[in-house]
Image (cartoon, rainbow, N blue to C red; front, side, top):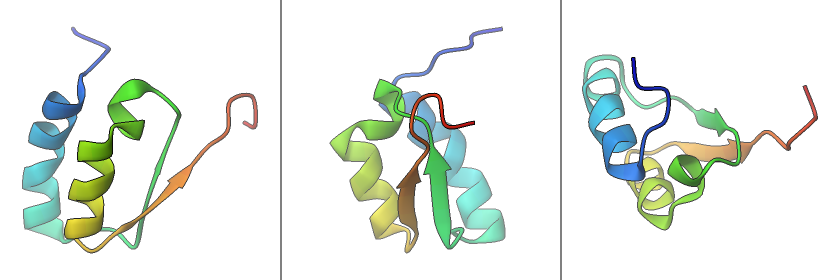
Length: 59
């Protein structure tokens, strides 16, 4: 099983759940490159959700 995703794989994986269940009010994520990519941030905003980052070491 692949544990890392690039931003296009992340968007591909999240598209169906967003369509089926609607966009969440907020998408919380870590600071990995797949989450901070401008393409992902733009895609999440276009879907109607906000982004919130979990700072490293805060959990």
